[in-house]
Length: 114
Length: 114
Image 1 (cartoon, chains in turn yellow, brown):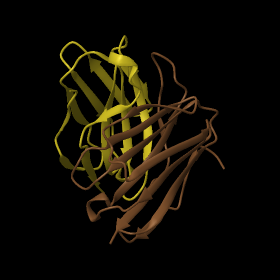
Image 2: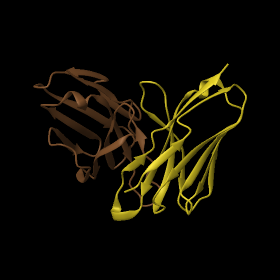
Image 3: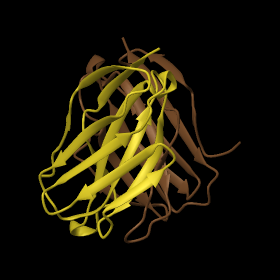
């Protein structure tokens, strides 16, 4: 059974710092990995999707990498801003059995101090 | 309306009540999903529908009954729920392709069972 772990569970840094969020998964047989952002009491906003054949994806100040063989992904946030404060979720789509659902980690709760 | 919408946004019900959650997607997608987000637990997949057919039931109790009348609408019918079913219920949709299948989420319904 796929398990997704996110480290750290919580992170508080001053504005302007670059930071890295980590995600690991136990079964490397995945189609893709998706990073989401969730604001308090809200739904999920998709940030980046990396297909299993890709190594990284970039969107603005965000860069996500994928090392499928080692079961790891990182989300790099450059020049952090208070508006980046949210919970960041990592999710993988498994490739076995035609399953389409995502397996999520518990998330990293990020606070950017002004 | 754009994206994925969910109604109601908040719902309080007793254990003997019957209620329904509604999800609608305006993205032209062909797959829809129900997820449950409980406090201190990862998001859990409940059901998957592809082209109106249920393809996954993640061992969900029968007091949760999904319905997908067409590829744009998804319902979750609730009856005789328990207090531990209180959670944020999230709907998602995607265009089902083997490699991409990026999922887009609605804002969720916050359910409280008394």
